[in-house]
Length: 347
Image (spheres, rainbow, N blue to C red):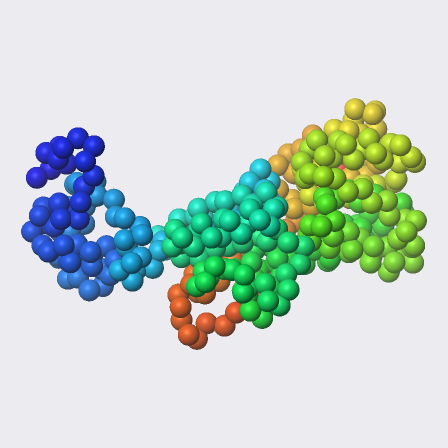
């Protein structure tokens, strides 16, 4: 029997593969779900039959046999964010060789939507979920609200002893950006960030204030804070409109690169030059930052390492190994200086 001999649109069944390979349906099932139980020669015959017939195993049926799912859920705050997209690519690269695939979901920063997605992913019997939480903070009992038996690793978010997590030190990142601007002689700095309810931006702002205080400046006077409702280019342009309503600061530090791109556009529309009239620093160092109109100085997040470490932790956590211990990893950011903040920089 060949694929062409089957009725049109009729899905290939397990027993079709068994008939072609002249083995039992149990042998086909073991080849798919527990290949170590099947003799290599038999396994090769079954795999040839699967390829010839175009058989697609039922994922939920596989899991019911005791095989581990090869699907990893990834829930992020914003699928339009280059930071999360680059992180998703890093995760996909990290799990590709082990035969896993990534299912990307968008919580839009809404806790209710996040909860619905986690329930849906648990129902789909995914291997586990990498989650960028929508909450500003999570309490000691937060993990109890997760779907039962769903392994979760927190992404870009510090966890407690009951969770595995991989995060970047955002306070240190905020201090790096401001220290660079202070070293250039700027003493009145604006911080343009997203909603203060988003932990990442609140911590970057906190780091900015700490660095100003460490330099002997009063953060209440030296730091102008502008919060935006979104995280994109238009939000950065709107922030400039608000800043222009009073005396413009010496420099602007943005909570992400997309906001920085918008700030640049807003400044250019007002006839204000970067870096001649004002210094500009972003955060994340997404791929496009170095290719911006004026190459953007940015606090770089170790995106590849973040994705790789998170994927490794989830695969370990979801292996159900009793020896597994929850780990909380904190990665360090670094400053990448380009021409948007310092005319002396070589791009």
